[in-house]
Length: 463
Ligand SMILES: Nc1ncnc2c1ncn2[C@@H]1O[C@H](COP(=O)(O)OP(=O)(O)O)[C@@H](O)[C@H]1O
Ligand SMILES: [Mg+2]
Image (spheres, rainbow, N blue to C red):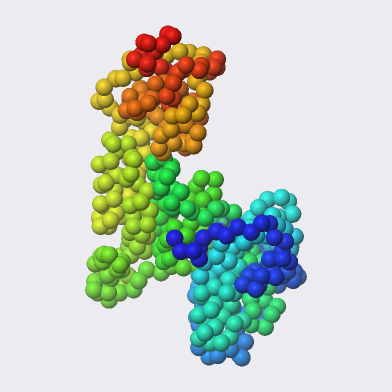
């Protein structure tokens, strides 16, 4: 993953200390003057984006930059009109007043366009603050071209405004929540925008690869549900143009997209089928030009192939339950050559989930629980030196199971396993976690527990 998007945690800097960092000078959030209500930033909620007066670019800017600014402003107005004001930020939305009282600001990460900080609100809740990254690649490139830093930051601010508009209109568990925004247009060419968002933690692909299959499946399923929503969104079919793991964060174990400024609500226009090739570095897909002159389903297909290449190929197959592997490889093949659309993909994922939750995938297996003695009212001591991978706990071997019968099969397949208990803990699918042990001699009374001990292990022992 590119270092640019990686989280960098500060040690709870004060807003003033943070602003002293030159590269982050643009993160001048808490220092923003509070505008009077009605100017669009006065600490009040701003339902719908209404550009403050004097929002047009000053005449002093180079003509090329002025044209770009005009273009972005037009796109934003168009999107704003399509979004119809939105309801999400509603009356309870946060504004500049909340921002000025926020403390413990520390930088979380940045990308080409924006810098993101964590902050604590006066009420104690934590939020993510997004603003333009003045030293980021987008602004730097623009400055090289036009030599107008303030105008270039303004250009980037339009992108953030676009994101705010989209986030206000689009609401889904797979999209980071917008809590509010603050903007200040008091400077000449400057337009400072701060979005206040649900706080997440950056997605760590390496870490994810080490989590149990069920957790990785959950992430892929959340992504599929998000893409289903985007394909049928109130603003039409939306493509995430910059679709990479670093544009997502985790909130309470759930995957959410956070970077929406590169989302496109337009489908590519065409005259003939030849205008509709969907190109990726490793593959191209010829698509059809519809009678209304749009490349059919191009946004949906773009998202789906990106989900396949950045997420499914890494997260879905390895250490999956063997009986589900053929279904998973069907999903991989069908999304990898775009034979499935998002509707079929969601159906296929739900089928896998159903088979997994119901335990139907376990049918026709030899019954092994008879090889175990069950002792009610006891449990074993955790962390008996028996480790397995990928376990839900670092201390021992904790795995998700469908039933004691499946746990018996797992224990039989492990060289050192002598006993197991089925715990009260459940995974997101509702399956219990079982703890596998290499010994059974240290038993602790526990009225709610049952310990299963291998007969072969107990025969030479005390039972
Ligand atoms: N809500 C959030 N909570 C925590 N970290 C976030 C949040 N949103 C973004 N980030 C982090 O900040 C980085 C930059 O944000 P992003 O919106 O992707 O900006 P850019 O448009 O510059 O790529 C992300 O890669 C992510 O690591
Ligand atoms: Mg990004």
